[in-house]
Every structure is written in C-alpha cells, then in structure tokens.
Length: 111
Length: 118
Image 1 (cartoon, one colour):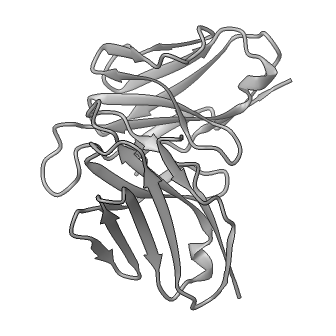
Image 2 (image 1 turned 30 degrees about the vertical axis):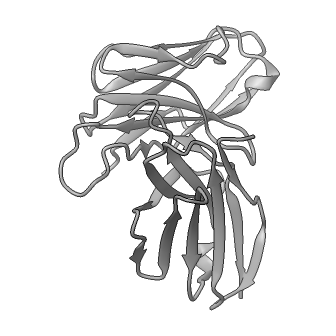
Image 3 (image 1 turned 120 degrees about the horizontal axis):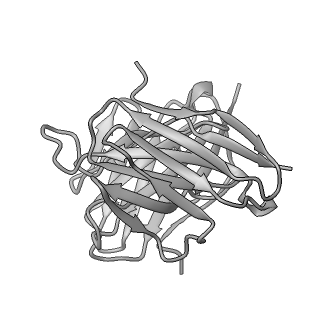
C-alpha cells in the first residue's frame, strides 16, 4: 500500500463547479498535512496546510479526518486557472524534515 | 524575488556523460532536498541535507551524489546518466526552526531542472 494515495483523475469540470479531492495516508502517527498545487512542467507550490479543525482559504477548504486517515480538498466556484495537479502531502513524523507526496489529482476546468 | 534557484532549467546530456545540477537559496534554510519527478508521478526524495549532515534515501542509486559546500548551495551529481534518469529534478528547502504561523515542515521548491538523456 502506498503511503499517500490519491485518485489520479482527471477531474473535468465546468467553470463555477464545486469539486472535491480525497487523499488517504497509511501512517496513523502522521501529524502534518498539506495540499500542494503543481502546474504542468512547473514546481509544486504550497496551496495550504491542513489543520485538525479544518481550514478555509477563499474558495479552498481543507479537512482532515484522523479516524479514517484521509484529507480532503474542496474547491468552490472553479476557475479556469485552477486547472493543475493537486498533490496531497504528509509528514509521516518518522523524521521532522521529510514529506511524502501523493502522485497527484489532475483537475481540468473547462469554459 | 526568486528564493530557490536552480540552474540550468534544461539540461541535455549524453548517455553516461556526467552532469551536475545546481541549486541555491536565499532563505537561509537549514534543510535542502533533491527530488526526482517523472511524468505523472510523485516527487521522489533522493536525499537531503540538514546543515552539513547528509541523509541518503535507501533506494537512491549510487549513481546519484550530492554536495553542499555552504548553506546557500547544493549540487546534484549524476555520475553516469542512463535513459531512465531523464526526469525533472527539483530542489527544495525547509527550516525546522521557522517561527510564526508557517509550518516548520513546509518545503519551498525551485523551478526544477528538466534533464534529457540522449
């Protein structure tokens, strides 16, 4: 089983749609969780950290479910510019310095 | 202003011809990482430095070496590139002692070097 698993997609949605991605992680001791965004042929960039209580940043909402070991990302009112790959990232806490990346979920927002 | 810089952005080398990729940072972060990323795959950690302490991943081939002469610079050496080493190579930094709201394990990536092996 992979340490971090994501549905690869692609999710193909119209502008204005709401879309949700889930990610599962295998190490129950994991403490830090992130969503990174990666555009085609570019580097990953931090989108948001995921906190235990859940957090929101504009159109983006991240949730953590420790009991089921999954993280979600909700994007409301999708824009064309949201088209990218979204990487779920976990710190497994066997080291403070290493992150485990999922393979990413690809989102395509169409006009 | 660029915070993590990678050079070159594109590198073409021949099978078996050594190549060096460079990374520099203006963030003064303790930790620097090298990742390999192939198409539609997750970034794969090759190794990282905590200050001058080198930490190799168990499955990183011996063909890959790294040097960190100072806080700001880190190099990835591929001694004998094979066709399977063609990939995007990403450098990242983090600072376990960050203060404020930023998570201490947030990593900041450079733009990457895309390596082609002929």
